[in-house]
Image (cartoon, rainbow, N blue to C red; front, side, top):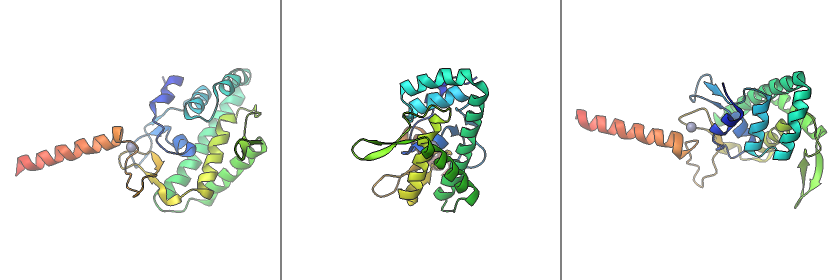
Length: 206
Ligand SMILES: [Zn+2]
């Protein structure tokens, strides 16, 4: 049984909130995912805090709200998973140099319209969207959806890549665009070990 602490098992290596949201499912680079940390609404909220999409205070306010409306919380969780499927499709397509489907882009448009409908323009250094006053159960998803649209509209799409060893997506911020792994501590190390073992085996059979 997954717990809310389990959301911290996934590394935040996407370099973008929307990609980190996609990376809440783990597994091999191709084929279906084999694990998912977003098992319920409390996990969605816990991940929001972990990933920086929600403050502790905002998460604390969502607790009683979701307990008072369990059906609404279930629906918000289901909707979040649907949005994640949509983001997964869009960014995995771009990482493979393909065009995402228009149905996925339409769903993202609808999510963004809903997010901005609950947002407020707030001044920091410049003005930016804030969901501080959004007291709906969809609150954890708002900044994720907006980050996805920002990445699509203003980001470097050719820097979006898939890890060579797992299904994680990330933005490659390296100068020579040479990043291949979600993290050197995970897939990068696994690859180094694999190469080392193969090299040794090759030497041994010579
Ligand atoms: Zn990886």
